[in-house]
Length: 338
Image 1 (cartoon, rainbow, N blue to C red):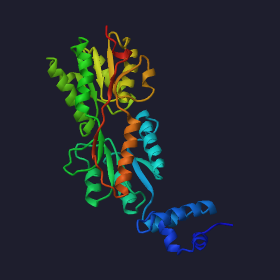
Image 2 (image 1 turned 60 degrees about the horizontal axis):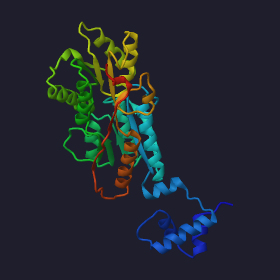
Image 3 (image 1 turned 60 degrees about the vertical axis):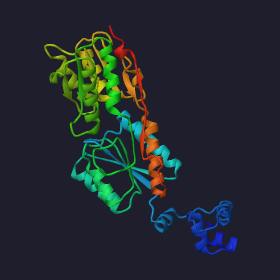
């Protein structure tokens, strides 16, 4: 026989309303009463109707993440690690994680956000791969919907975020290559609309300037944050009359493609060509050769984002709205030098 909320209320000689509000966590129920209700419900084996509970509380008890990609990229190690962090932390807060994908800045992406938010399918959103001016940030701010971001756009509205100082740390990465004596250091980046591209290109330029190295536009090319994009960008660079002797990549997936292109060109990575990435994706210490990278804790950053979002949803005041994470330069065999 299924135990109902009416049975719990009868057992405690309380009204159904009091029992319901105690189980839903409302503050107008005394703490002693709440604990009695929770314990009695547990002992009786009462399982609340989740759909009805959500309807009463006007909550979906879920958060959303729409992966911004032109094609499904759930196998991309960065996104796999990021989504794992989101999911684990969401579960720790009793929340479900709803995940989908859509091409960035597309009508499909806009419709997905509008549908999820207007139907209250989720209680909050997580954003990443921000654009310099990001319509998602503007839209969610305008409608007053809870959200958090990995990175920060240049939009004027204030919102909670977690980020790494990409400009400073990309300079650290290129400094490492320049300090090994390399004067033709190339950069493979991403689309100019992306915030990570603006930050990491600026860090590359800062490093060149600090080492009195000229900026050569021929050594700067664009990928698409995939290994294929890195592969073809590297082939263009390595076909130059004066090819680079070191390549700094906007992310690790780009660097993975560069490793393949270098081998195809007969280069020994770590000796006659140095290659470095950015992200610190788990497993990339086992590439051939192991990849030097700026190791940012993607999984932990995702969990921190959910902690901040869960606090917003619960109506709590965030003491720290803009969290800066310090990554680590991991020097491996892809940049051991000559």
